[in-house]
Image (cartoon, rainbow, N blue to C red; front, side):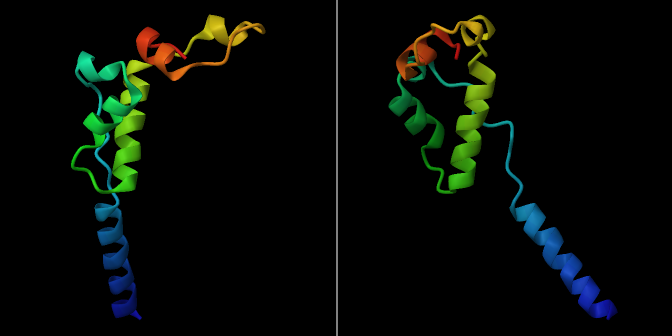
Amino acid sequence: MRAIFSTLLLICVSLSVSAHIDTTNGFTAPAKVSGNARDLAIYLCDGVYSDSMKANLVFNWITHNIEFDIKGAKDPNRSPAVVSDVLKNKKA
């Protein structure tokens, strides 16, 4: 029983270590790519093969570069967000 517990513990630890995602990547990108969604995605995800890491990089960039537009969110007559405007104004 002890051997089974030790084996399961080892498997769980190795899975959690391999599942760790670096949350410090993707905070910044050069201005020349930050205004275009396609160029930004290519810049952030270049050479990254894991879909979860790609999602993490894009998430990090958005959360560190796009501000929540509280005033716009409260406006019932606001227009739907357009990606190019969000990247330009850094608000959504």
